[in-house]
Length: 313
Image (tube, rainbow, N blue to C red; front, side, top):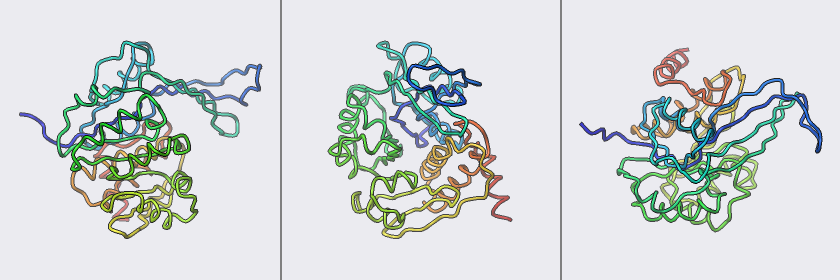
């Protein structure tokens, strides 16, 4: 029997993060020894993992290359039961990011793009979308010239009943304004954190920022803005509301926003109200920050136990 439950089509980038802990970032021409090095598959992988662990079917529609990085990406995706929409790209390897974490906890990044930074319209046209499926678009995708144009043209060709989620990330300043203007009317759900939202609007107050974003989206679009331990703001049908977060001792905030977004999408795809989906997403983020590592979203059973316990208390 064919499974007709909603799928999340992730059009972003799954890459390898090489995380190195150093006493200090080296000055030009010098060298330092790392006290530890870890390899994680990151980027879009974290959102996909969160949605999949909640129970949503997930398909990675981005590129994955031939070579050691691409193999790591495929291994990680398969371990989470994420479907690969395309075959291995034989024209290069997947990208990676070197993250240097100094003694003060400051992170410095050096990234190398790979085959995930490009896509062609023929690959996208072959995607077997269903009306109940969801599409995730990352701001990083719009920063890649070889990916932005075909991705946006493909989105414009789709029927309007297929929801599109946009997560701008920290890339807004690098996105060509005309590309962003092409995407904004197509967005069903905007999901960002507080800093990204303020960067986009130039307004400190999040209530006002949500209103400004809403005026640039379609009338039916919904907005969710993560506000750290406070929880998240939602805006729907012209009204904004702060959904309180859950108390948590933060050990590692890396990936918490991705856990929030993945669970948010998966809950909405099941028909849950935006308010209740935000509550579940807040709980997932609270659990994620209490653990070390990027892909620390809880599985559905753990999340539901957490919600029952905290609602009762």
